Image 1 (cartoon, helix red, strand yellow):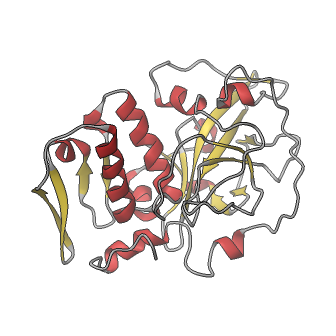
Image 2: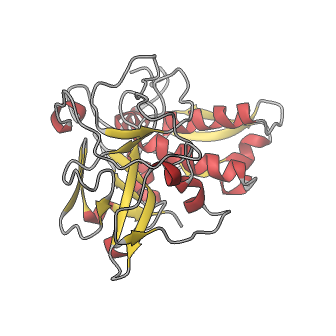
Length: 289
């Protein structure tokens, strides 16, 4: 695959199957959709962000979140204009119409930023914007923890058999360009398996913005909760976003189980979350520390 380097051994190849293997996952779990009517009630957006684009259904309201929090960052992700299509890394268009909006964020030109990678990208972008560089840290498939603070000092990842270590081979830097290079390396060596192991289990009744549904494996997949609203009785609805394979722009998923709610999902799920391209048991809801 495009994201596989010749020197990678077996344990790194696991991360390549973040979303599927050839002929598995996207073909078996993708609904064949020719044309889907967008039933989402759109507000007249003051800005192209999630909280402005999507109205909350009657009986629910968004609870205030700290302006400096990861929840606020996700709820206010910039969106491409209404009607935009999801693009693959190579410039082709995603044919499955499983989304209500497209996040306005570059994905690069390589087949790297797939499903779990998109979750890590959002997490990294948030901490980079907050200048909390010491919190930009991801566990690779072999268990090695890759800290951005080490990268900033000019260290670069070296692979030797099944082992990895840092080698200071570059000039210390903290430019955004170098941050993106760091994330691309993370995408190459981490995936749904490593992400699943590094997160903590979460109960559906406590679902919150920033939580992740993740199935670690080959194939595996991950989607992230980007907004939540609550009712007076304590019920919750939530919105999820994903990337997929091959690498593609992050997008807000529809809810085909209830067109009147799309893209909102209710948290009263008993067995599994049925997203358009993957089904997650409720036990696969997890959260960051």
